[in-house]
View 1: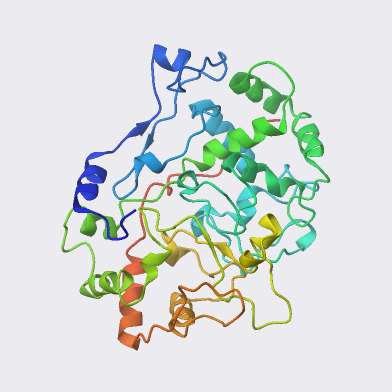
View 2: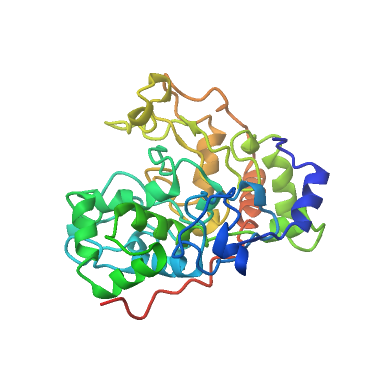
Length: 363
């Protein structure tokens, strides 16, 4: 992909406001799943997702076996906010992915059941539909896998396994009725839980930011002069676009940038998944959309401000045997740092603010 956004690409993105979802009889038959016949339950009324200005509709990932429907998204919303989906009724997905905080929790590392803490920051749930591998270390290959992972964590939702999760959900007649409506008759499964929550998460989208209106629409008043200078730095001297490229500002890869190497212990990161020593201390490149709303930063939440993040890169990261070879000293001035921050703040978009917590849950 061209890191500088080809002009013709901009025109295409501007014109494409694709609606992900199909209505009418076709939804009841194939739902554009390559001809795969769906069950009556799967073929509910389609949920239409509008891809806003600045995002690549072709990068929006909806698995063929999990088409978006209104009932499924609503089921996923209920599950996402329901604290009963923890061993002691205290933790929901929304406990660490809070809507008012752009679906993060504002903490360096997340706090789960019994006030236990893990070692990593909660990444935003926004624009996960444009990503493949999930979590900081990419251990979940799909959003469906990610959506059920935390339930069986002893420091998050606290279930010993997913069977316990499913058993608890199955005690609520209201949930059994909703799962049957969405997925058909039969026992609730962990896979169905993952499909429902993943469907809801795919509706959390950020685009049409001031940066997008400047970059795609040519609206000179959309961003400040400082942000315009920051854009030039982003794609040149600051070298941000080497990893933060594409319409979601992420290469979807894993990099060691030196975070944690000055302390007593190092989080192995991607190495725990691949066992490739070259990926020791490597973590996934996060999206920069809504970045100004999702502090603190990095996988360990070690930086409270964007200025601190930029200064880390400015000095060339923290030297270690596996530091990414793209990390070098940048020699940015204070005014250039301020311009970069202005550009990053211009990535505050829209498309997720509509989400509200349920006022009641299935009984």
